[in-house]
Amino acid sequence: MNKHVESDLMLKALIFDVDGTLADTESAHLAAFNHAFTEQGLDWHWDEALYTQLLEISGGKERMLHYWKHVHPEVKDIDGSGLKDTIEHLHALKTAAYEATVQGGAVKLRPGVLDIVRSAHKQGLRLAIATTTSPVNISVLLRNAIGPDWKDFFIVIEDASTAPKKKPHPQVYAQTLARLGLAADNCLAIEDSSNGLRAAVAAGLKTIITQNRFTAHHDFSGALQVLPDLGGVSVEQLHMWHQK
Image (cartoon, rainbow, N blue to C red; front, side, top):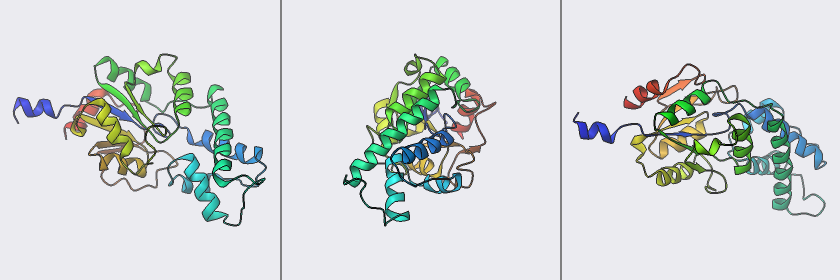
Protein backbone atom coordinates (compact mmCIF):
# COMPACT_ATOMS: atom_id res chain seq x y z
CA MET A 1 0.00 0.00 0.00
CA ASN A 2 1.49 3.34 -0.94
CA LYS A 3 1.82 6.31 1.36
CA HIS A 4 -0.96 8.28 -0.31
CA VAL A 5 -3.53 5.50 0.20
CA GLU A 6 -2.45 5.00 3.83
CA SER A 7 -2.98 8.69 4.42
CA ASP A 8 -6.45 8.54 2.86
CA LEU A 9 -7.45 5.67 5.14
CA MET A 10 -6.13 7.16 8.38
CA LEU A 11 -8.43 7.43 11.38
CA LYS A 12 -9.18 11.13 11.82
CA ALA A 13 -12.40 11.22 13.86
CA LEU A 14 -14.44 9.34 16.44
CA ILE A 15 -18.23 9.63 16.34
CA PHE A 16 -20.08 8.74 19.54
CA ASP A 17 -23.66 7.78 20.21
CA VAL A 18 -24.88 9.06 23.61
CA ASP A 19 -27.46 6.95 25.45
CA GLY A 20 -25.99 3.61 26.44
CA THR A 21 -22.68 4.45 24.74
CA LEU A 22 -21.18 7.49 26.45
CA ALA A 23 -23.08 6.72 29.65
CA ASP A 24 -25.38 4.15 31.22
CA THR A 25 -28.43 6.38 30.87
CA GLU A 26 -31.25 3.94 30.20
CA SER A 27 -32.20 3.22 33.82
CA ALA A 28 -32.49 6.96 34.42
CA HIS A 29 -34.53 7.39 31.25
CA LEU A 30 -36.85 4.54 32.30
CA ALA A 31 -37.45 6.09 35.72
CA ALA A 32 -38.10 9.46 34.06
CA PHE A 33 -40.67 7.97 31.68
CA ASN A 34 -42.54 6.38 34.60
CA HIS A 35 -42.39 9.65 36.53
CA ALA A 36 -43.94 11.46 33.56
CA PHE A 37 -46.73 8.89 33.27
CA THR A 38 -47.57 9.32 36.98
CA GLU A 39 -47.47 13.12 36.71
CA GLN A 40 -49.87 12.97 33.76
CA GLY A 41 -52.25 10.70 35.70
CA LEU A 42 -51.71 7.67 33.48
CA ASP A 43 -51.74 4.13 34.84
CA TRP A 44 -48.85 3.18 32.54
CA HIS A 45 -45.75 1.63 34.05
CA TRP A 46 -42.76 0.35 32.09
CA ASP A 47 -40.66 -2.30 33.78
CA GLU A 48 -37.14 -3.07 32.61
CA ALA A 49 -38.18 -6.02 30.44
CA LEU A 50 -40.79 -3.95 28.59
CA TYR A 51 -38.45 -0.99 28.25
CA THR A 52 -35.77 -3.23 26.78
CA GLN A 53 -38.26 -4.18 24.06
CA LEU A 54 -39.33 -0.56 23.54
CA LEU A 55 -35.71 0.48 22.99
CA GLU A 56 -36.05 -1.14 19.58
CA ILE A 57 -37.91 2.11 18.77
CA SER A 58 -35.47 5.02 18.52
CA GLY A 59 -36.54 8.31 20.11
CA GLY A 60 -38.50 8.94 23.31
CA LYS A 61 -41.53 10.50 21.65
CA GLU A 62 -41.62 7.73 19.05
CA ARG A 63 -41.33 5.14 21.82
CA MET A 64 -44.31 6.54 23.72
CA LEU A 65 -46.38 6.85 20.57
CA HIS A 66 -45.60 3.23 19.64
CA TYR A 67 -46.63 2.08 23.11
CA TRP A 68 -49.83 4.11 23.01
CA LYS A 69 -50.93 2.96 19.57
CA HIS A 70 -49.85 -0.68 19.60
CA VAL A 71 -49.93 -1.78 23.24
CA HIS A 72 -52.90 0.26 24.48
CA PRO A 73 -54.97 1.08 21.37
CA GLU A 74 -58.01 1.65 23.60
CA VAL A 75 -56.41 4.70 25.26
CA LYS A 76 -58.05 7.89 24.03
CA ASP A 77 -56.98 11.53 24.08
CA ILE A 78 -56.42 12.79 27.61
CA ASP A 79 -58.52 15.75 28.82
CA GLY A 80 -59.54 16.50 25.25
CA SER A 81 -55.97 17.24 24.14
CA GLY A 82 -54.65 15.83 20.91
CA LEU A 83 -52.38 12.83 20.73
CA LYS A 84 -49.39 14.84 19.56
CA ASP A 85 -49.83 17.49 22.27
CA THR A 86 -50.06 14.82 24.95
CA ILE A 87 -46.91 13.10 23.75
CA GLU A 88 -45.09 16.46 23.67
CA HIS A 89 -46.21 17.19 27.24
CA LEU A 90 -45.22 13.74 28.46
CA HIS A 91 -41.82 14.13 26.84
CA ALA A 92 -41.30 17.51 28.51
CA LEU A 93 -42.14 16.01 31.91
CA LYS A 94 -39.84 13.09 31.22
CA THR A 95 -36.97 15.34 30.13
CA ALA A 96 -37.26 17.47 33.28
CA ALA A 97 -37.20 14.36 35.47
CA TYR A 98 -34.19 12.97 33.62
CA GLU A 99 -32.32 16.26 33.88
CA ALA A 100 -32.90 16.36 37.65
CA THR A 101 -31.60 12.80 37.99
CA VAL A 102 -28.43 13.54 36.02
CA GLN A 103 -27.79 16.77 37.92
CA GLY A 104 -28.09 14.72 41.11
CA GLY A 105 -25.10 12.67 39.99
CA ALA A 106 -26.96 9.42 39.36
CA VAL A 107 -25.64 8.94 35.79
CA LYS A 108 -21.97 8.30 35.09
CA LEU A 109 -19.89 7.95 31.94
CA ARG A 110 -19.19 4.34 31.00
CA PRO A 111 -15.75 2.83 31.76
CA GLY A 112 -13.00 4.12 29.49
CA VAL A 113 -15.10 6.82 27.81
CA LEU A 114 -13.51 9.87 29.44
CA ASP A 115 -9.98 8.52 28.91
CA ILE A 116 -10.68 7.91 25.22
CA VAL A 117 -12.27 11.34 24.77
CA ARG A 118 -9.40 13.16 26.44
CA SER A 119 -6.66 11.10 24.79
CA ALA A 120 -8.20 11.31 21.32
CA HIS A 121 -8.67 15.07 21.65
CA LYS A 122 -5.08 15.51 22.83
CA GLN A 123 -3.81 13.47 19.88
CA GLY A 124 -5.68 15.62 17.38
CA LEU A 125 -8.56 13.31 16.48
CA ARG A 126 -11.82 15.12 15.79
CA LEU A 127 -14.67 14.11 18.08
CA ALA A 128 -18.35 14.20 17.18
CA ILE A 129 -21.72 13.13 18.56
CA ALA A 130 -24.42 11.46 16.45
CA THR A 131 -27.50 10.66 18.49
CA THR A 132 -31.29 10.53 18.38
CA THR A 133 -31.60 12.07 21.84
CA SER A 134 -32.47 15.72 22.50
CA PRO A 135 -29.94 18.56 22.90
CA VAL A 136 -30.91 19.17 26.54
CA ASN A 137 -30.21 15.52 27.41
CA ILE A 138 -26.76 15.72 25.84
CA SER A 139 -25.93 18.99 27.54
CA VAL A 140 -26.97 18.03 31.06
CA LEU A 141 -25.17 14.68 30.83
CA LEU A 142 -21.85 15.95 29.50
CA ARG A 143 -21.83 19.16 31.53
CA ASN A 144 -22.08 17.06 34.70
CA ALA A 145 -19.73 14.30 33.53
CA ILE A 146 -16.98 16.34 31.84
CA GLY A 147 -17.50 19.92 32.98
CA PRO A 148 -18.71 23.23 31.56
CA ASP A 149 -16.09 23.04 28.79
CA TRP A 150 -17.45 19.76 27.40
CA LYS A 151 -18.24 21.35 24.02
CA ASP A 152 -14.52 22.04 23.55
CA PHE A 153 -14.07 18.31 22.96
CA PHE A 154 -16.86 17.75 20.41
CA ILE A 155 -16.61 19.84 17.26
CA VAL A 156 -19.81 18.42 15.69
CA ILE A 157 -23.05 17.50 17.44
CA GLU A 158 -25.98 16.06 15.51
CA ASP A 159 -29.08 15.15 17.51
CA ALA A 160 -32.87 14.83 17.43
CA SER A 161 -33.24 18.54 16.67
CA THR A 162 -31.06 18.42 13.56
CA ALA A 163 -31.64 14.87 12.30
CA PRO A 164 -35.34 13.99 12.69
CA LYS A 165 -35.06 10.64 10.91
CA LYS A 166 -34.24 8.23 13.71
CA LYS A 167 -31.73 5.41 13.67
CA PRO A 168 -31.50 2.90 11.97
CA HIS A 169 -31.89 5.58 9.29
CA PRO A 170 -28.36 6.88 8.56
CA GLN A 171 -29.35 10.57 8.40
CA VAL A 172 -27.64 11.56 11.65
CA TYR A 173 -24.37 9.93 10.56
CA ALA A 174 -24.52 11.33 7.02
CA GLN A 175 -24.97 14.83 8.43
CA THR A 176 -22.18 14.32 10.96
CA LEU A 177 -19.76 13.24 8.22
CA ALA A 178 -20.77 16.21 6.07
CA ARG A 179 -20.11 18.65 8.89
CA LEU A 180 -16.81 16.98 9.76
CA GLY A 181 -15.80 17.24 6.12
CA LEU A 182 -14.46 13.69 6.21
CA ALA A 183 -15.09 10.48 4.32
CA ALA A 184 -16.58 7.57 6.26
CA ASP A 185 -13.28 5.70 5.79
CA ASN A 186 -11.57 8.28 8.01
CA CYS A 187 -13.98 7.84 10.91
CA LEU A 188 -14.96 5.30 13.52
CA ALA A 189 -18.42 5.13 15.09
CA ILE A 190 -18.96 3.96 18.66
CA GLU A 191 -22.42 2.59 19.39
CA ASP A 192 -24.28 0.29 21.78
CA SER A 193 -27.36 -0.93 19.87
CA SER A 194 -28.34 -2.73 16.69
CA ASN A 195 -30.25 0.34 15.45
CA GLY A 196 -27.15 2.45 15.99
CA LEU A 197 -24.96 -0.10 14.26
CA ARG A 198 -27.28 -0.31 11.28
CA ALA A 199 -27.37 3.48 10.95
CA ALA A 200 -23.58 3.78 11.13
CA VAL A 201 -22.90 0.93 8.72
CA ALA A 202 -25.46 2.33 6.27
CA ALA A 203 -23.43 5.55 6.29
CA GLY A 204 -20.30 3.54 5.46
CA LEU A 205 -18.74 3.68 8.93
CA LYS A 206 -16.70 1.04 10.67
CA THR A 207 -18.32 0.61 14.08
CA ILE A 208 -17.24 -0.43 17.57
CA ILE A 209 -20.04 -1.74 19.78
CA THR A 210 -19.94 -1.35 23.56
CA GLN A 211 -22.95 -3.40 24.56
CA ASN A 212 -24.85 -3.06 27.83
CA ARG A 213 -27.54 -5.01 29.64
CA PHE A 214 -30.28 -3.42 27.56
CA THR A 215 -28.62 -4.31 24.23
CA ALA A 216 -26.58 -7.48 24.90
CA HIS A 217 -29.20 -9.55 23.06
CA HIS A 218 -29.01 -7.44 19.86
CA ASP A 219 -27.63 -8.68 16.56
CA PHE A 220 -24.27 -6.98 16.07
CA SER A 221 -23.36 -8.60 12.77
CA GLY A 222 -21.17 -6.21 10.81
CA ALA A 223 -19.54 -4.57 13.83
CA LEU A 224 -15.77 -4.11 13.76
CA GLN A 225 -15.54 -5.11 17.44
CA VAL A 226 -18.09 -5.95 20.15
CA LEU A 227 -16.88 -4.99 23.63
CA PRO A 228 -18.37 -4.88 27.13
CA ASP A 229 -17.12 -1.26 27.42
CA LEU A 230 -14.12 0.92 26.54
CA GLY A 231 -12.28 0.21 29.77
CA GLY A 232 -8.61 -0.47 29.02
CA VAL A 233 -9.01 0.44 25.34
CA SER A 234 -6.46 2.97 24.06
CA VAL A 235 -6.62 5.34 21.12
CA GLU A 236 -3.77 3.32 19.61
CA GLN A 237 -5.98 0.22 19.79
CA LEU A 238 -8.76 2.07 17.99
CA HIS A 239 -6.28 3.03 15.26
CA MET A 240 -5.28 -0.64 14.89
CA TRP A 241 -8.86 -1.87 14.65
CA HIS A 242 -9.72 0.85 12.18
CA GLN A 243 -6.82 -0.15 9.91
CA LYS A 244 -8.22 -3.69 9.69
